[in-house]
Image 1 (cartoon, rainbow, N blue to C red):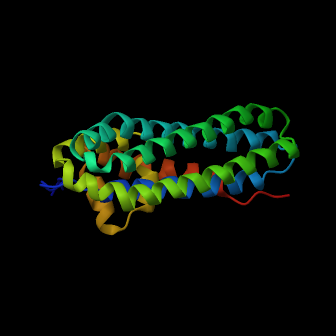
Image 2 (cartoon, rainbow, N blue to C red):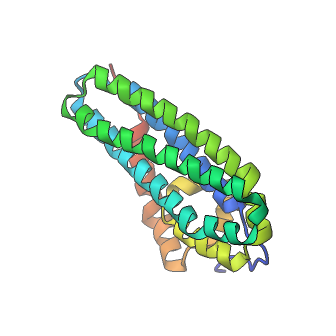
Length: 217
C-alpha cells in the first residue's frame, strides 16, 4: 500500500524542528572536520570545503524561504510580535555575515591547507555555530507557536516544500525519529521514494562515510 501524507488542519511545525536538527548536526561536524584536517592535506581540505559550501548554501536558501514566506505573514497577522520577527531577521543577518566570512576563507584554506588558515576557519565556524544554535532555539521556542496560530496548513505546506529543497532527504531522515521518518517519506512522490530505497539511501551512506571516516595523522 502506498502511504500518503495525512491531511492536516494546522501547520505541522515539527517538520522545521527536524530540519533544524540537521543544521545543528552539520555545523558541529564541519567544525570538527576542519579542526581535524592535517596541515598540507589539500585533498582533505578540498573535500571538507565542499561540504562546508553545501552546508552554507543550504542554510542561506533555508533562511531565504523564511524571509520571503514566513516573516511577511507574521508581520501582517501577528503585529503584537513584530519585535520577535525583527529579532529573527537580525539573527539571519548575523548568520549570513558569518557564512560570508567562512566562504571567503575556504579558497585560502584549499590552496595549501595551511594550519594557520585552518585555525582561523575553525574559529569562525565555532562562532557561527553559537549564533546558529541561539537562532534555532529562539525560532523553535518563540516563532513556531506563532506560525501554528497565524498560518494555515496550506501556507505552511508551501513553506515546507521550499524548505525541504534546502536539505537532502538522507540528511533529514538521519535526524528523524520513526514517526517523523514516515511523515517525510509520505511527502515524497512514489517514484522518488522508490529511487531513495533502491539508490539514494546507499549513495547518501557512501557520501557521509567518506566525509566522516577517521583521518590518519
